[in-house]
Length: 353
Image 1 (cartoon, rainbow, N blue to C red):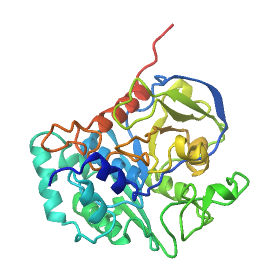
Image 2: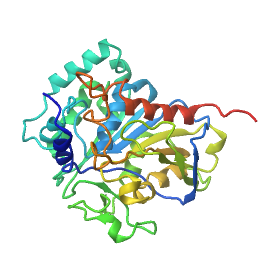
Image 3: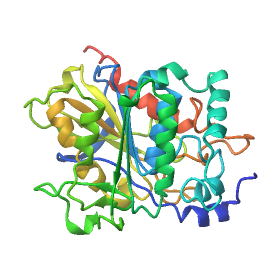
């Protein structure tokens, strides 16, 4: 199917409404510094995301399963679903008006990629721990697609104990948050059923904590103290669709190395440009990270004519338009490569003075 024109892309993408996942700490208002090499643990990294960020998180896990031990996805559908088509993304992967995606067809796609060494080995994929969440009142990404994503992972994982599937009644499209002293102002929250606003949902539900407890079942809490949430210069990693700055949360003590990393990916209309720091402050991820010595990296996408709502690329918009088929969901995807490069920087050994 030919790609839509730029005008039709702009009209179609105006229908895309997605989300993200983050929290806590004080943002340091200073000129962004380069992302530091922190000697982070190269094992047990995780990637989590919501909606477009959830689709991208799964793309990362399938492309590079050997780099991750865990995956968390909220309010998203199957890996590979869009197959490089925005029309298919809208009509098959968000709603099912164009018919439900077929697991066998997508598995054949993955196998072709694997045979060409464009995604990771099936054996590595099978060892991940996976947490999936979907609101049953989601009117942006049909909950049926969340069910199919769970079926897809059941085929891949070595053991069903590695998978947790949470379906929350009377909850819409978004990321539920706890209502406590760190709760964002009401205008930054969406109703638990309707979403909207920042897509942080006032459900009084600590999804971030539940997810990370499952993804890291043997981790014990400590009282090292909170850390620092700061902006970093993302321009050295930036490719099509990505902003010039991102955020990173570093708990106290992780500057000395050895901490694991979680990549947390926002969804459409969830970047700093759209909602400021609501996403990176209030999802609950930083609270868990502070007490469990986990670095949280918050890369940022940006809005453009081709991507007006600042979504992550799960249908191919960031790839070279001259290609017959975009490789956005492989190791060759430009955003996939940029995100992995950020992870590698955090895991690199600091240079000695």
